[in-house]
Length: 284
Length: 244
Image (tube, rainbow over all chains, first blue to last red):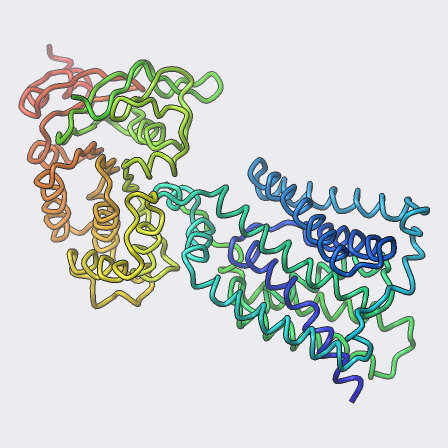
């Protein structure tokens, strides 16, 4: 039973961050490696504030501020760079942030991570976490569903289909894309505020490239831009990811097998949805 | 009073000069044709007017205000509508959403009340006979239907100046008539139109004035009758007559 609660918790905790990124990458077609950097900084800002102040409110606010700051940096970069340039730069920004985290031993304890992260008083058991994060996830799904069908969602879709055509009808690209990045930052804050508390540990290895591959895989498989599709694929692929533990494999093999499985799913999903992901460029 | 005024507009990419010292005025309510061979800079001029390209020199005045530095979205909100040569509609969105996205982007003072939005969307689609396709993806429409939708959407979103880039391109002969009717309706409503077209009889039938461009500059302008009789026009399109 505990394993079921654990799976529900993992799905629910990841849901706000993935749905947020779905607005940027899935709906807005802005591909970048930013979520890794945003998640990393959000989690560290949140946990370090918690360690130093013992206040969960301040911890959440610090996480939100950090998420907004880094997310807006990526938004700013996206206005100035072409898609390939943004991809490379966002990867560089993430690696830079990771280097800071790994080398600031006094503050972050480097590669050792920060153990003993306190949990909120009402989140002491796995089931508590599952129920609380489940409620947050449901609220996130409902909010994302309505945002997707709102004027904002239509503007984002229009820009994704053709920047010029959208701007010609009066859609403000900077305004719309900035909001998409802000939504992604808010989603990331909820996920990365809860995740270290759930593990009672903040470890930099949780913010490496494989986490990003999972995000991409979930969005591509769930149909980029679709809230219900991405929510469903988050649940199914998280179950698949965690089920690997039950295969009789040496412990050292589980990680590589999981990555190979991710790669296969991603490959299949990209092949299946290549017209959605990489639509032919339309001339003016 | 000129609704649109261009003075000394130039644009180039590197050493290649695409527009050279373009200057003309467009009076409110006029339909002005822009013609010239391929590569003469007509669409580039439209891209500069729409705000997608920044001119290297010169100024663009709209209702006597300088809009040279404004973004495309700002210009659209001021009332400049663009109809693209390759159908500027969103093919992955429904017809209804295509109209909605334009209506929702209107500036606050002209924004349509939420309750009236659906009515205006319905009227827009009704106007071009596409009501029955409201829930369909716009990508399913024919070229002519896409064009009608694009012009109707631009009209209903309160634009005052229409930049129409080859509105009959990719449209069947039968629907060309409908497009022409819609452009004539724009004139009746007092809208100002700047139109790029290769179909000279079509241009002659709807325009008050014609501007001829070649190699990035204006070489001729006048009424359709004057331009049609001009030897320069024939030389631009067919080359100089070797017998004369």
